[in-house]
Image: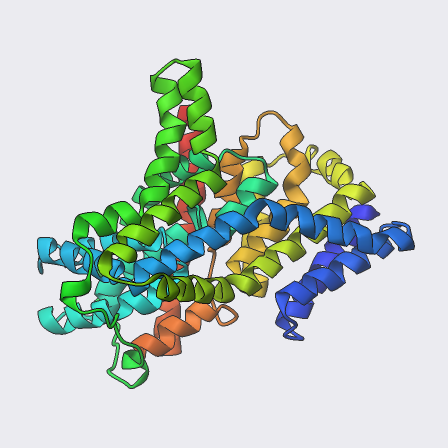
Length: 440
């Protein structure tokens, strides 16, 4: 009966978000309270349970996500993202222009939130399309596939970060595995798939040029090396501290890597570095830098609240005991946990549109499955991440961003954007299983 109640509550959550247009954070809280009542939690303790779940979740990920947002903001406002994009495009030329855009999208997409990366890089696509007389959608899909993969698979993006904490995964391994899976996924869903999109028309229009590149002049921008090292320093640091202990078998080295590789410490070190290299060194004063950081924090406030709301629902399920009922039920179902995670996330994603919310909802449901030792939490994070990108359509803001900015028809948006996102999702889970063969 408890599983039926849980399914009903999840459907109610989806209904609140999709039909009644309730803010996802409020929807999570309302659903958590309702679930607590229906699952028999004492009325006097339900609100405390909800508060504890939110506090535990936000306490774990807030610092990391906030620090990551600040790094991303400074990468944008300093002109570092533009430097990276322009430098790569100069190296590739017309023959490999799509490859250059794909690499640019992936590199810039790691430190930047999806919407920021989209708005920042789309003008580059228009510029390149005009310069080389190439169809916009044809050259855009590889870059946008890269941004999507980074958003769904790689820390420090909010969903992978929150999932890593919820499932008690190793952040460094999630990042390394995510990078391994990302490359073939982007090559197929982005570079190869775009070959079939040459005839999709993207008409010039006001919406396509309603945003502009960074206003930082060329002489005030950082160098390419500084831009790359600074914006991706968290990736380098987290990857290095995960790999070094396997190469150097020394207890002191292991302890040092554990300390430096702690996500909060790694992100804080990276932020301090970026504050100097992308801020003070370029002539920015501390007040201006702090204004950028303040703006970044405001932009992610709602994302943090949604993550906190997901933590509340998770806590209600844990305290009520429904989590164990889920384990007992799913262990009898003949379906692999990774495929199950992907399937549930994909269904929720199609229903509500939000990749982050879909991933967090699924993690809350499947958390107890980690008691099954055949499940690698790092691959489970990526399985959920892949499912969260499935079939972006009319209830996803990203769908409308693509349609309006590129000024394409609804039909062509489905043929290009929606199919690309679906291929990323399907290929993601396929490569999770392939990677599982090699590491287990």
